[in-house]
Image 1: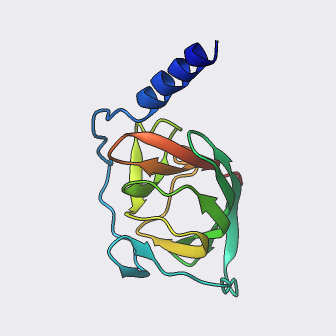
Image 2 (image 1 turned 60 degrees about the vertical axis):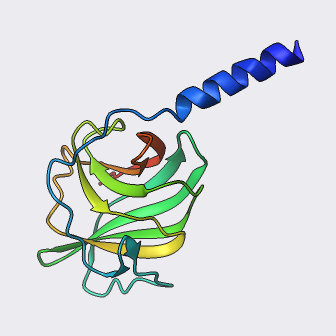
Image 3 (image 1 turned 180 degrees about the vertical axis):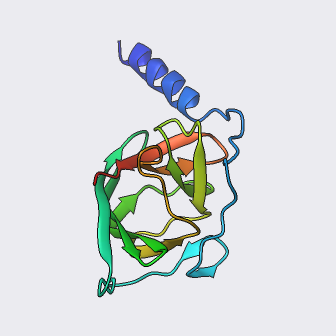
Length: 153
């Protein structure tokens, strides 16, 4: 019985890590505020002075444990995603996507890297929250969703 259960777990684990077709974003990424390639500028607090809170959400785990909060702020024509107490497992080539759904069928890549804790990302353009309301933590090489947050107004 234990051997059968072990075989099932190993088989399912292998399926979750198989490389799928590579997804392509619907528009290019050009975030600002990066310290280096794929690394977002860590912060301990976000200056919300003059900022309007547009939407927010909480991360849920998918294939890997993921937690924390995310808020979308607007100041003039600039938008920022602020991550608070964010946690997820490490993985190869994790990306942050703004997507229409949880399967990344149509998305905009907003970061080529993921930090833990508190950080923010300035978005290259205004998001359309009627269609792009999911923040995905995506493992690009294996097309695996680590976790997601739905932005709610």
